[in-house]
Length: 486
Length: 98
Image (cartoon, rainbow over all chains, first blue to last red; front, side, top):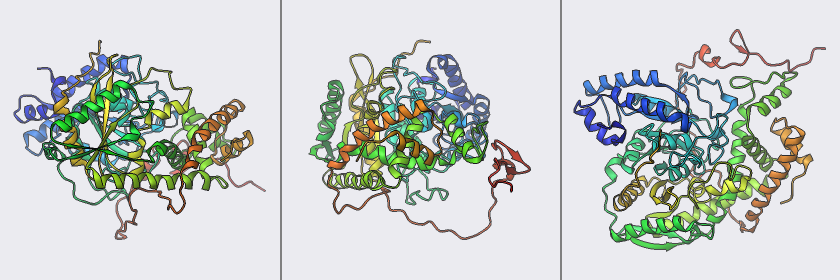
């Protein structure tokens, strides 16, 4: 039996029947990581020993029948999610040796469920980037083609799932950091409704935009993981306290009569022809199953990226003020006085992209520029949200490309911040509006790279988002996983 | 919206408590100007009578009973301290001696 090829739900059945143990599953993934990791660099920290112990505990839970859907299934976690006494670096020199004294709430949920944690995955430094090229620990490679980026910032999590180093992973999405790498690596990635998943213990980038979400190979598997992590949390004051459905049960819902919006603003000049074709095919698949396709307008969405870069950097400049060398993280040797220590600690600990964003955000919030940049961006943000509110009176879901093109090569955009930012042009709107969005594979390009299609739903309408995705997946079939030679 | 000068970059770096080398100041000035040029497009949006929106969901204060609960042990809180003295974080002298 090839354990690595089994879906999470197939593994569940095998575990329940006693035909396989969690230890065997975890060992299979450890072997795979050991073989492939020298080529991919998906992980910053590996936690095999602990994972095997967790597996034994999971097997015990299964024997005692105290298990749940994901008990015994291993997972990889993005390295900005706090894990008790296990390094959480945010792929930054600043936190190179940081060991959190507590677990993030999502990690607690994963541990309670008996999911062995394989390791912490590589990312753009402090989640700022779209390619993992800003990681202090070097970039992660795209398992479809090692010359291409896996996307970012959650590139390590995405690559690990695509390369069968893990069946599931968690990432974070502030402006597309789950969906863009999911698109680039041919897997499913979900940015949930803001407030659905706890942010407690997740190192913040832009607090009004950040959400934790799942990566999986298929829609059903991503729904299973979403169900586990979507819990109210008293430690997160923005956590929504409303009932959560079992997302796995929502998949089979018929799309007949579903109103699917296609916004013309997302089919722009810069859109790759093959990407457009793949999205049109996904739309057609829904139409063939009885969905009603509606042309809609989101007139301010072309301003989303400019809005996002003000809001996100303003919030990041404030959030990253905590890195001062006093309580944790890097401290400079230059400690002539406190302010000198702060300045040099931050100069030495942060990479160029993080510095650039702190500078832009500080500038946008500073006296004299606050109205022109920050306040202006917040007003446009409202217009962007109102566009969605209006659109969702006419349609149930919206379908768009996830990114304007497939994965790009290393070094291609790293010198030009605007070109790099443009790969998030279709994803930032959902963060600004606080609504859920999912990316799923919709085909392969002529140079054998995955193409992602995005499904956007109204606030807390994850169920219809997932059933739409499930219908597309059934109709289009799988693009498979990359043939990674090792 | 205007272009950003080297002097402004230095001023903002000071606000952000970020030491920049001369070379970094040059590069930062250039790249921030490019980004601010990109940001110019926000000016074309009519936002008269639009309320700013800092958060997509309504935020409310979350209240709880004021009861004593177990808190993080000092050992754990000091686990990552760059310079610890007897349960305190040591920092460079802040108040000058006479």
